[in-house]
Amino acid sequence: MRLANGRAMARGVLAGSVLTLDRALPNLMEYTGAPLLDALRLVTVNPAAMIGLEGEVGSLRVGQVANIVAVNAAGRLVASIVGGQLAASL
Image (tube, rainbow, N blue to C red):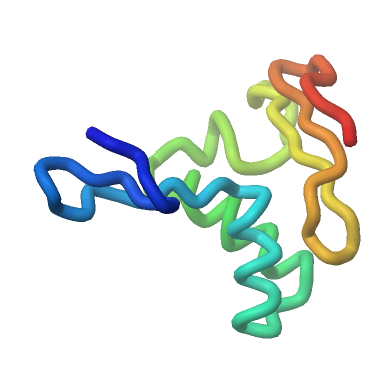
């Protein structure tokens, strides 16, 4: 697999996306007009449920992994918490 120009390519064919959550959330809000809370659900709770992991990730509940992104009103990343520990802060 080769990453180039924002694309994942394998044998000359598009193999997947390299879009990260910190870019996807503002894009979703901008292109659909979705408010922040709706957009957050679409990129967290819904994907976790789609792959059967809603009991482990995708929301903040007792017993779930404490992986959290803090965003501002525009959906831009402010901080990341991984396993309950601050991983990055802008």
